[in-house]
Amino acid sequence: MRILFIGCVIFSKNILELLVESKFNVVGVISKDDTGFNSDYYDTSIIAKQYKIPFIKTKNVNELPILEWVSELKPDIVYCFGWNSLLGIDFIQIPKKGVVGYHPASLPQNRGRHPVIWALILGLTETASTFFFMGEGADDGDIVSQKKIIIEKEDTASTLYDKLIHESRTQVIEFTNQLINNQLIAKKQDHRLANSWRKRSKVDGVIDFRMSNESIYNLVRALTKPYPGALILYKGEEYPVWQAKIAETPYSNFEPGKVLKISESSILVKCGLSTEAILLENHELPETIQVGDYL
Image 1 (cartoon, rainbow, N blue to C red):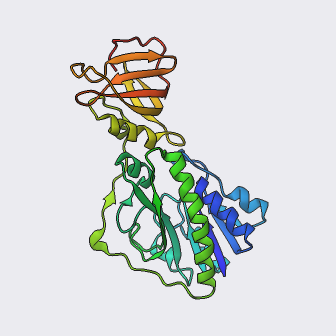
Image 2 (cartoon, helix red, strand yellow):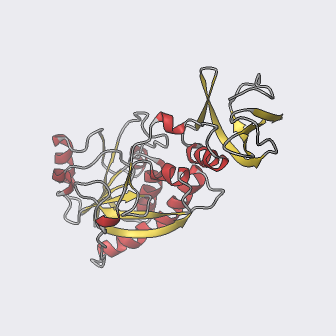
Image 3 (tube, helix red, strand yellow):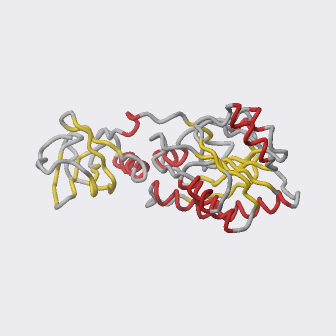
């Protein structure tokens, strides 16, 4: 089975390496130069060069020269894992077995943008590693493989990302062999159960100390590295927070945002209602901050 691979993030790197090392027939790779859009960007043409696989770089796979290049490769299947734009119908119709995409969420629920980040921000306790056949819509095609992923309270964007990669490696080997042997049975999505997450904006990553300590904790762990970090706005400047811990304080009559204690690099801040507080354990706030200041 002739596989064309599309992708430009760390997840793409892991799966492409797996396919090549497992001796599957990868006949072409599509990557792109770093545009700054993906914080986990990886140029998969590096792997293509290493294994002497034909490759091309483009921002738009739907352009005529790209369609012609893909057609000449005669792929049986296309794997599109880690690409931030939709494939047009002219592209999708080229491979006879279709195009398999990836979405780290429990489809048909939670279609759309930033599934890892939103799952953590919302405090979900589980998500899924989902491969599906791509169509003209977003994340709405028949499911090829889906495995549940438990989200622990301690999970961050980085650890959840690693869990998804680990589970997906087993899935890819399994359904690739099923495709080769014409044994794959895809499952239709129930569109009545679907919702779609919106694109995250910068303001979604700003900490407001009127939020509960749990909401702040979830925001921080969702936006920690490889993402840009949850932000504190202080005296007109932006300061990222990389790690936080839920805390309590006896001062129920103190206002949200008040600095209660500073210990080495940690800062305890009043937040939410009643006795809630948040301990900022890893951050880039200035050393000039003192107890009694407001963030």
